[in-house]
Length: 344
Image (cartoon, rainbow, N blue to C red):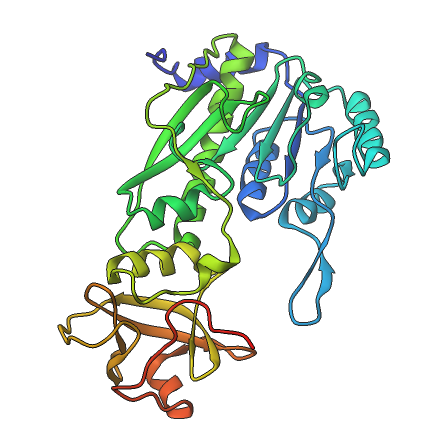
């Protein structure tokens, strides 16, 4: 049991009396920027920010900075973008520069959130109070790269955030605090992520206060309930209508907006942004259209039907099904590909 929080005046006085932590930060996308913003608003000193190198994005494939880099530049924070962190790896020179920058920064703790690089042992050992990870699941469920997507895809009713002390394993470290977040029936990756980010930022501030107060007490993860959230493979994004309709509907929500679920009709690739389990009971073959109109395009599945409501042609914009049908006639009896289209 965690001790009851002190009264606000007492907490403020205690915080003022305790030494300020120097918190280095490693993260890249908006999920990570939320917690960095909270750290700065909380008055924590952030002597160094690590983030991924700029990546090509958009139609022009121009190099774009991630949300964490943008925030660091706005606030005038010291910034490093190593391509790797292994001192004996391909990017050893980058790693050595990052190491020197961290030694100069002398952080008490390093906070990691959706960074994208594995931390080697030299970095795990560098901060006196260790490295904390903001992980978007209730560990030990959904260790790994894609916890938000896998929780939705699996039909979990609840997920959450864990603040973990990092070790050499894959999300195996002891956990300081957790908070549950319900997964709503219409949640997508995009709608769930901001709630998890806000929860993670709030929990992080609590754990840092625990560390400052000397009451932080991480608990080892149980051996029961371990499962892994593997990185999304491109092949998974193709809808296989031989699967059950509820399974496909969850996958579409899990992958929205990125990388997105896809299907193919008459050789035309379509990204599916929205769908719901249909009501038709036609005994059509999987992938065959049983109805098409203003309400959507209803497709037979291995079990039940799936109504596609929002779709996008390659190079186009997302459209409601009714609008798509005006430019791409799709009629009952015609069929979508089951899985990835054949090439050659």
